[in-house]
Amino acid sequence: MPLAIYISRRLAYMLVALFGVSLVTFVVTRVLPGNPAYLIVGAMADESTVAAVVERLGLDQSIYEQYVRYIRQLLSGDLGDSWRTSNPVSVDIGARWPATIELGSTALVLALAWSVPFGILSALRRRSLSDRLANAVSGLGVSIPEFWLGLILLLIFFGTLEWAPAPIGRTLGEVPAHTTGLYTIDAILARDWEAFKAAAAQLILPASTLALVVGAPLLRVTRGFMRETMASHHIRSARALGIPERSIVLRHALPNVLLPVSTMVAIMYGYLLGGTVLVEFVFAWPGIGKYAIDSIAASDSIPVLAAVLLSAITYLFVYLMMDVLHFVIDPRTRT
Amino acid sequence: MTATADGQAPAVSKPPRRRARAAGRLLRRPAFVVLLLIVLIALFGPFFLGDPLELGPDTLAAPSMQNWFGTDQFSMDIFTRVVHAARLDLLVGFIAAALAVLAGMPLGALAAYRGGAFDTLLLRVSESLQAFPTLLLALGIVTALSPSIPVLVMIIALVNVPVYLRLTRSAVQPLVNADFVLAARCAGKGQFTILRRHVLPNVSEVVFAQFSVNVAWAIQILAALSFVGVGVKLPTPEWGAMVRGGADYMIYGQWWVALFPGLAILATVLTLNQVADEIRHGS
Picture 1 (cartoon, rainbow over the protein chains, first blue to last red):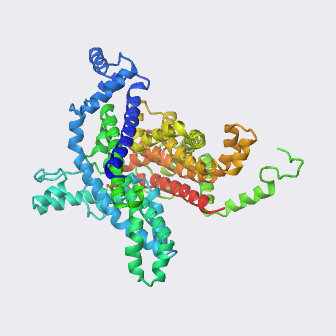
Picture 2 (tube, chains in turn blue, red):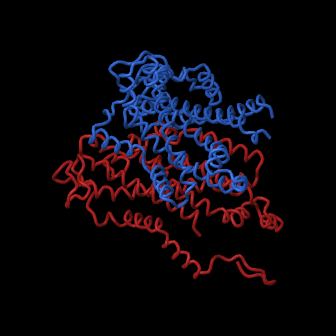
Picture 3 (spheres, rainbow over the protein chains, first blue to last red):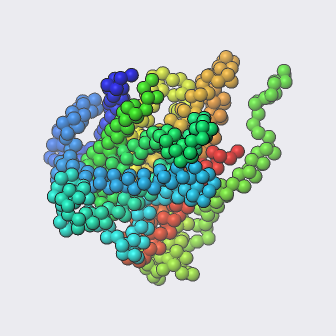
């Protein structure tokens, strides 16, 4: 199957999924009991405001017409307004997404750095000390409440050792010149090493918390596939040919493992980019997740649902990119 | 069911002695024993302890012989509250996971068995639901409804249904054309009877392992929702809400307020996940 056909077919799937996703958020806002106009303007609003919202959303029309109107608004980039910040939600989210991207990407890099090598090592040496350690760490990582882990890290590295800065989000004395919105990258681009150090210091604890949580399933998947691969016929053949163990692992086994692991990586990255509510909340990190929480606290539901919708779309998009990448590098998917 | 005349082995349930032996085997699994212990503590612990809302003489007292886990900012005893909270957390986790199984397992089996448009539709719906980050989706729904415990249970169950649907579907699919299923079909059994009596018993192990994981997950979601302030509210004893209550004190040295309820979550979730591993690898 040529690439173009594959991509268009996957895009079609994604459109179906997007339809489902939009239906879910639509149902949540409109079909649930209660007048959605109050959800939008808050319970304190006077009657004329409510009437205006009813008019704008077409709440007096049929559900079907309401849905069409909702989709049309979404397509024109209108996610509604937040009455808490009195900005359009798209503006608010645009301002906060770089923080989430910076945190999520750093966390993913850290997670990959510890989990994949560790997973491979533990698969190669079954029942060894490192295998047992990997088992314990991944078991803990899967089970630990991430908000609590964040608090524990704060207790140790801020409260006790005083190595890390206070959990006050991304607050630099002087924000580096805005290029990407990722403070660490901007600081490097501006060759402002002081700012880089400050930005990295604020990033390290929340990113480590996430890296531990996200790394645990990655470790398990890596270990599982690595064990499977090492027991396969082509590895046995390679051994029989007398190929050194090192090259068997790196050149014969690893490529077969990294491919399925990358699917898991995509799932995790999609999750991280959609805003990690709990960790952003603990560290007051001003990303999408914290935006959603702050809006909930103010009973401002439009930004919450917009964040929900956007993170689902991000997830689907990252997943699509990974599928396309697989298609390009793995000939087996092309049948 | 009775034995047939031609001496064919009847499909009877396990005889009692084998059942007792199965129970004995369960007790030799460490995680299962720990889980049993946690459930017993949740059931009977509160009878031996005082009122979880009772105020003591000191606020934020460090752990001591009187207050094993210390006291919180309202001077309530944290040990008492952690034990009391086990009831709510386990109950919500269990009911939510059970509802999710009850909805997801039959739907998944039916989807695999019938195939076609029905299958495709259910699969697409669950994929759409799974594209949402669980916690954010739950948050979105909670904001639209006002949070109460039944609502929280329903939401946690809802976000878990696709998991069972897809799991059961993939477990049932290879069985759809198995000889014993075809035989049952030839015998003129209806599709629900076939699914219930012949197909689902074969996938129950996978589903039970997932159930244990799911109770754990449900507890994590409940705790997370309470932690961000949309789930259970203080002073109701609930682990996530208690961690939230102690979060601000963590960095000022009163670590015990948030530490112990968090440890309770970790211990319970870890145990449930281990039990799932034991179900998968054992027997």
